[in-house]
Amino acid sequence: MNVLLFMTSLGRCADPAFCPSNEELIGAVRGYENQLAFDVINRGDDDDPATIIVPLTLLKITGLDDVSCGRLSEGTVSCSFTVRYGYKRISHIDRLVRNSDGWTIVDARVTPLLQFDIEVPKVTLSR
Image 1 (cartoon, rainbow, N blue to C red):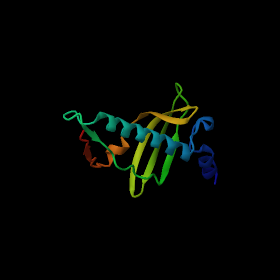
Image 2 (cartoon, rainbow, N blue to C red; image 1 turned 180 degrees about the vertical axis):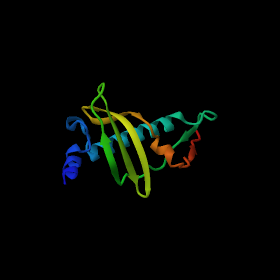
Image 3 (cartoon, one colour; image 1 turned 60 degrees about the horizontal axis):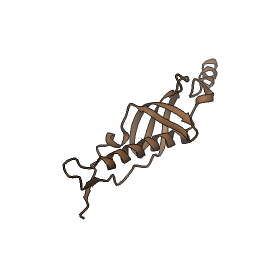
Image 4 (cartoon, one colour; image 1 turned 90 degrees about the vertical axis):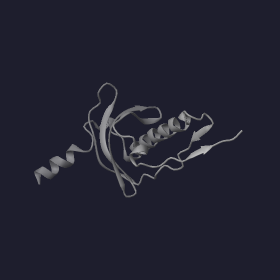
């Protein structure tokens, strides 16, 4: 019984004042994925400047598991968690910062879009 009380008192974050909710973590992951997609789109095809690479889909995040965040250090919080994309599970170890827009991933040890080996179709625009 005492062990159970101790475990529930630990919570998911070492510092409750700097503890992103599941919704905030999902927003941070989506923001990070959107930036990756933007970078891919803007990169284009180096061999053919008229070719634009367009990722057609971002997989829906269906939930988070095993969220654990450390203490605030140098303005960031390190969190580890598992993102559920339907049947896929991707483990994250990210450093996040809280700003006026919410939480933002500033360092990620995973590249979610590329983790799935999704083939990104190319669209060539003619002028």
